[in-house]
Structure formats: structure tokens, C-alpha cells
Length: 428
Ligand code: IMP
Image (tube, rainbow, N blue to C red; front, top):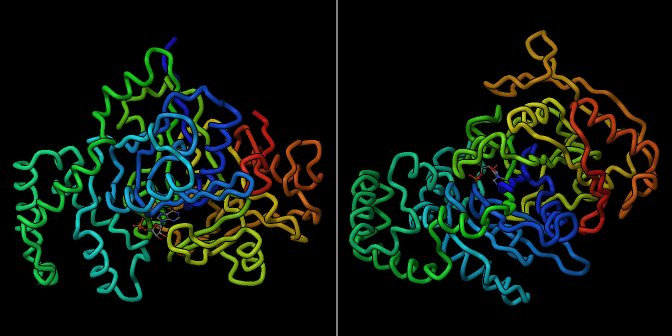
């Protein structure tokens, strides 16, 4: 039998609840049947929160599989902050009793370099009010260096000569900038620092292709774990330039891992029953009022990574439609339905009014001037929290989720009714 591939991707602006769904897949749906979980984009800007009973685990760099008994990999197109990964995340997970023995980092993933966070700070300061509102984790400058050919893959940290050459090149180019010169970086000292990091990360590193082949064998199942969401994709999203700086879609996975389009079993999209966004961007359905406040408070909508309050608003099918199409999504998992429990009425944006037209896909050049056209639903005003069976769901709540799937023309595979991994209705 050939290998099987599944992926879980965000269909909005991140924070859709992918961590919970991944934990459900790994521990209930396909327990013991997944050979390898790979995180393949972003860095510590992302945040997955997993709740198992009284235990709450926040992950930033490692894949969710790290807390399940499964092999997991940080793969190329990820940018890794080695000290944060080892001293904060892995150290904390070990303290919580997770062994992390099956956790690996591809030599091909890139390193966040000592200057990336500083550069991001300079850039945000220079932009003032129009700053990109990033997580200040150095992610943008790291990806910038990768595409400009100055990135340093983890594997190079174990090759002193090559590393020194790459550090020198970096400093020669960067020192053309006044602020950079003020950092007083010296190639010998930086190389020594990076070599020491290389030594520390070495026990976790693997050559990706051989590792995947030996882990999957001939009939393994690989699960790809997306960070952020299509609304933050640096090329696809109409929110550009208020986006993150990596690719977040199915075609990115296919390119990195050489997965053929016909090899997919499932491409699952995760979306909230409403929308949130952290950091500045044009948000057509934003509710800067009591409704948004209620969503934020009931949904605990504060960034996992930065703690910033998230903006909240009504579900926007226009943005989700693009994400579904771009990812060739095969099913949707709707999260946080219970957050809407007390709403007397619920709105959903079905199209935008834009330059006199009614449009069903967002204009790629940007969302300025897009006015939402809403359909209004009666609320259910009864608790759906923790419901695990479809026939126990309030009638109007059921109508709401069924209608969303119908509008999007896609199977509804599950509904999340609370933060705990078990608070899930599985429809398959
Ligand atoms: P960066 O990814 O740190 O460059 O930040 C760029 C934008 O993406 C900011 O608005 C961040 O808040 C947003 N962002 C990055 N990662 C996530 C995430 O995991 N969830 C939600 N927003 C994110």
C-alpha cells in the first residue's frame, strides 16, 4: 500500500483551533495510526493551545505531535529559534512529563539568526503607525534572508568553515546599514555562538528525506500541521502586506515534501464559527463593539504568543471560500461554536459589496473598500458547550453549521464545542 498523506490547515487568519483538532486526530480519530507529524512553516510566531482535562499546553515551535506518542519533525520552510526551542519549549515540555524523544528538526530548516529580532524592531519602529504589527520574533527578517539567499540552514551550523563564510557574507551586507553597525557584531564571535547552538541542536537533527523514508516505510501515514492560516499567507492573502512571511497552503506542502496531488487522503481546513485577527489588518466583518467584546471574552481571544487581545467579528465566507479553493480542502472542521451560544442573532458575511459589484471572492489587491453583505440567523441561546453528539446540538446551532458547509460546498467533518480535545462532534 502506498503512503497516505493528511493535512490540517487554517482557513482564516490563524488561531482557528488547529492544535485541538490535531490532538483529536492523534489521540482519538487515528490513534496509533499516524507515523509522522510535520510542522512545515512559520516559527515561534505561531501558537497552538491544547487542553486535555486540567492540563493546558501551549506550543509555538514544535508540532502538536510532540505531546503524543508519535514521531514529529520541524521541516524546511520553518525558521527555528534554537535557544527558545531548547531552553523554553522543550525544557517546559519535559518538566510537564513529555519525553520529546521522538522529536526531530530537519537540517534543511533555517535558523533565526542573532540579528533577525533586532532588524524587525528597527523596521517596526521606522514604520511607526503603519507598522506590520508582527510578533517581533524575527520571523519576517529570517524569511527575508532566506529568499535573498543569506539564510543559514540548521545543517550548516555543524560545518565551521561554511558557517564562518556565511556569517561573514551576512555581516558584510548587513553592515551597510547604520543601525546594524551599532549592534557591533563580529563574525568570529557570531560563528562561535552559532556553532555552540549547532552542537546543542545536533541530537535532534535529521536529513529530512532519509528520515521520512525510514519513518514512513511503505505504508505509513504522514500528517502535515499548518501554522497560521491562509489569510496570513504571504502570497495568497488579500491582507498583504499585513500578513506573515511564509507559505501556508497545500501547494507549499507538495513542493517541500514532493507529495503528488493524487496522494492526498484528507486536506482538512479548520475555521472558527466567527473570525479573529491579531495585529493590524483590514477586517471587513470586525465588531468593534459589545458583540466583538463578548466573543473575545467567551472565546478567550488573546494571542497565545504575544497575549495581545484579538479583534473579533462575524464569520466571513468570502475569505474562507478563497482559502478552501486555494488549498483544495476536502472537509471543514468548525471550532468554537459554543462561543456564540448566548448571541440572540448571528450574522455571516456571504459576499462583499466592492466598487459597485457583489463579489464572492476577495479582491487580491486588498480588502480596502469591501463592505460585507450579511445573512442573519436566529441564535440558539442555549449551551452547546461540551456536546459530543450531533443530535444533542441545539436545532439552530445545527442549522448554522449545516448552512455554512452548504454555502461553501464542502463536507462538514466535525464541530468543536469547547476547548478540551474531547469536546468534539465527529461527523467524518
Ligand atoms: P509575524 O508572523 O511575526 O511576522 O507577524 C505578522 C502578522 O501575522 C502579525 O499580525 C501577527 O499577529 C500574525 N501572526 C503570526 N503568527 C500568527 C498566528 O499563529 N496566529 C495569528 N496571527 C499570527
